[in-house]
Length: 217
Image (cartoon, rainbow, N blue to C red; front, side, top):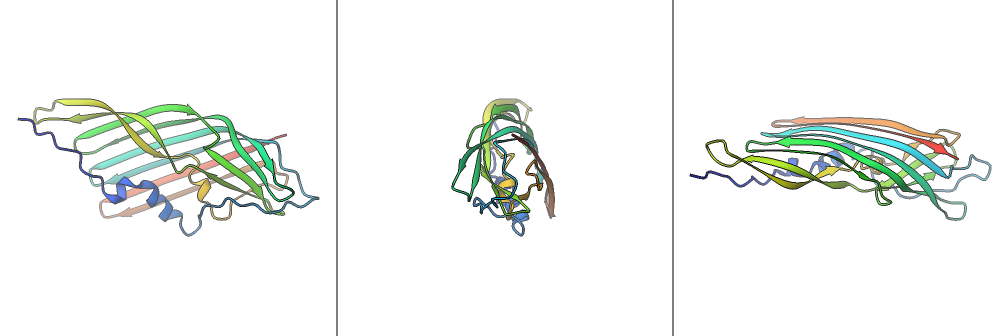
């Protein structure tokens, strides 16, 4: 007798991980996309930035578990100078790489891969009159292909299929930092890191995030 059970609808806490991350960041982070004037005598923003970002998470809700490591290596090119008020950049080239897996009572899945970065992945601007700050906007999530294997009956028989998983975008956290992130006085480096965790009955969530950009003139 086939006892295959339909996959249970994931709980709100597990099905929407970015809502949990937003909640953890809410005090300090909101999406910022504006920029203010640069002083005429200040350092001039570079034509390009090259950089990396890395996000990791471990999550468990009941019998559901998930581990994610996703990183990006990217080149940003200057795309607009609106008078003397805003310097904007856009992703020109690069790659995003991920290694993610998860499981529940009946199924397990895994996704490992990479893709080219595109202009929608990250859109930063340089702001401030010294000290300078960089504000970022981009995507919240990205869909990736995964292979899933599920137990389909009491005899332990399994079935493997292709599915799509939604992962936190490697630049999501940067887009949520309320007042942008610091840029050094010479406008040559942008770097930092964040980490957070949450634990309640039946639910644990831990994440780390780091970024580093260097100017190219």
